[in-house]
Length: 122
Image (cartoon, rainbow, N blue to C red; front, side, top):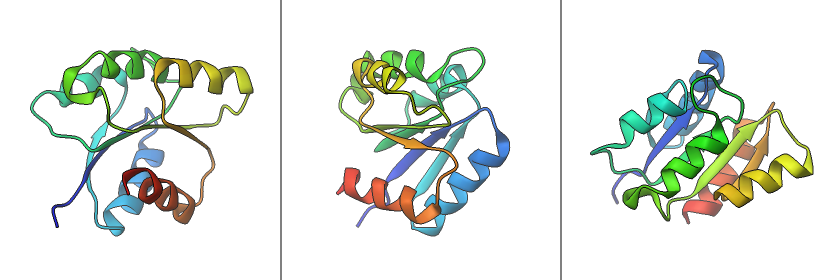
């Protein structure tokens, strides 16, 4: 079985560390990016199975990143999960409209993150 690769995008180093640790612990390969712009730079030549992104980030926010990823042939159909402190319905709607697959509100429990990842990646 090949290892699935997940990109985690967050401007908070501590959140990235926690997500990376949680995913690696569950056997996934993780690529880290500090904002949307950084993430787009790392997408090239990097086969990804999933992206977990924050919403509020400098340079390119989560919504902008999702739109850009959805326009990228290699990322058109991969699951993209928003991991954010935002929980308002209209922000979720905006994320969905941009192409987000799911939404996890911070702070999250590691087992909750893994459950969502397993459900989405099958």
